[in-house]
Length: 225
Image 1 (cartoon, helix red, strand yellow):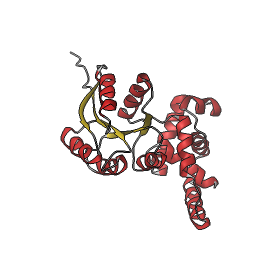
Image 2 (spheres, one colour):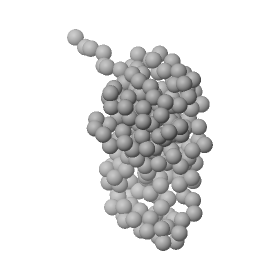
Image 3 (cartoon, helix red, strand yellow):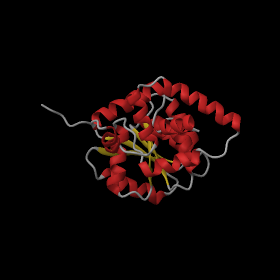
Image 4 (spheres, one colour):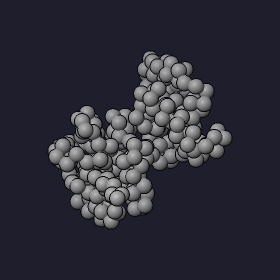
């Protein structure tokens, strides 16, 4: 006799109680998702995650006390680590970038319609990135501010060495990701299937030692700098 899979267990982290309440209502209305804990700051988030061992954490980045970036770093360093989906209003690009660099799998805007939030949660729970192409472009722009010539040269050389180890098709995929294209758009540009795009992207994660698409995009931008 088949049994129903266990629902994805989620912890909500946001200092705004109304935001947490709205997210709980959205998530708990789905049979395959359930909220198992809440926290209003980074320290509380670490404690709740340690107690509940959720599958996914929806993490605000700007909170009183310990911020989401520091909390994400510590949470992901402790096994069994959940997957982290960053919550943002986009007034804190640098914090979002930092969270993604520490291994968060994606981000969602707080004003995203419920279907978009649910899709992002499910994607991250499945180990897939949930990154809006338009927002990805903004994050990349925020990350490529003024740097010294020596720093730019060092980043460029390191990025080019990494890209040189890729196949031609993997480089093309990486550049399409840097352009902010979704998987279907990459498939159309390269005349391949979406499944092949996903396979190339998985290969990029392994070969480049990155955790998400923003990290790939940043590396490509560094190589072209």
